[in-house]
Length: 69
Image 1 (cartoon, rainbow, N blue to C red):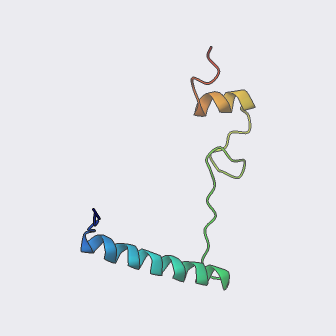
Image 2: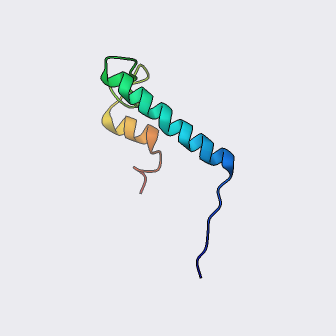
């Protein structure tokens, strides 16, 4: 027995438009257009990075239960 999956028309329109705009952004970025670099908060490039903390201090901040036995 074959089953069919129905999607809401708004979902289909939104997915088609998002694919279109992602394609436009990728094309613009490859031509020297607008680009964004995503930086994690625990990266040395981040303004929130605390260089005074040790590796274990940063590990304990992001994973508080990781160092407990």
